[in-house]
Length: 109
Image 1 (tube, one colour):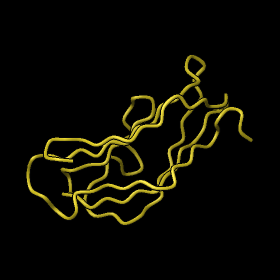
Image 2: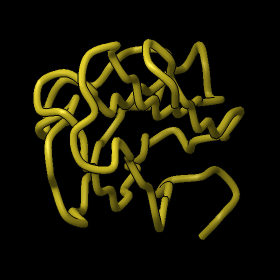
Image 3: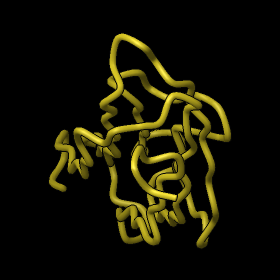
Image 4: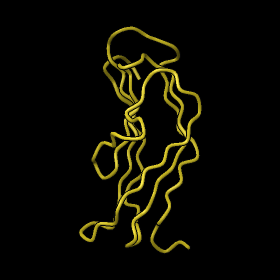
């Protein structure tokens, strides 16, 4: 993305079984440390554990996030957002995702 811009990847309306689920994915980032960050959200709530949001130079790494089932909302939404500030360019200014897997999808064994 350009300065002060963001690039989002979203997976919406995922039906999750009553037991809840887990999402896992591989990511890598090459950006200005502490400034240009990859954020991850589950149902609109930013996840601030497992090192997220992340910035700097991180080679391919597996991340896992568990989430509970919600009786009021069985459809879930996942979003990754790479946000760049307007200062300097460091590295490639890129965040990559691969092998996104959602465990606990309703109807799948």
